[in-house]
Image (cartoon, rainbow, N blue to C red; front, top):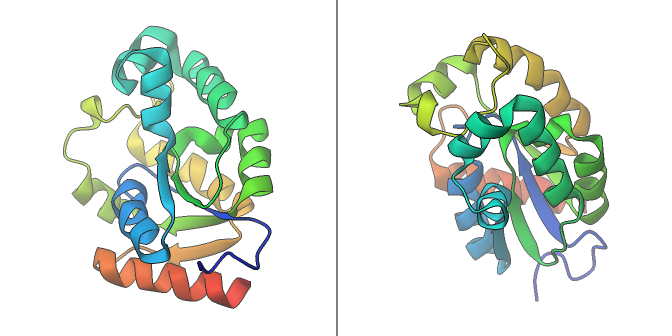
Length: 175
C-alpha cells in the first residue's frame, strides 16, 4: 500500500531548474514511496532518437519546447514519480496534463547553488534562447515554477535524503 492509495492523483511530479535535483531525488523518492520512476528528458531522448543537447542544437529553443510539449502532454503514468525537464513549464498543455495526473512539487534551489551544481551547461541539454544566460533563464522560469507548484520544497543546504524526507512530509500533509 502506498501513500497514494486513497489519493486520486497517483503521481508526484517534480519541477525545477536544471541542477535542482529532480532526477537524483526522484529516484530515491520513488523507492521510498514504492512508486515507479519516469524521467521525461529520457522519454524525449528515446522518442526522438537523440541526446537532449543535440535536439536543442538542431531544433532550436522553440522547436525543442514543441517536442517536449507533444511528448509530456500525452504522458500516461500512474503510481510514479515523474521528473521533468526544467523547460516543461513553458508548455501549458504539458503542465495541465501533469497537474491532472499528479501533485506538482517545485524543487526551489537558489541560483548560486544551481551554478555550483551545474558543471558544464553546454552538455546538459538546457533549452536556452539565443544569447540567454543561465541567470536570465533562472529569473524567467522561477515565477512559472511557483505558478504551477502544489508544493514547494527548498533544495538548498540539504542532502538528497533530507530533501526526499521533506517532500514526503509535505505530500502527506497535502493529502
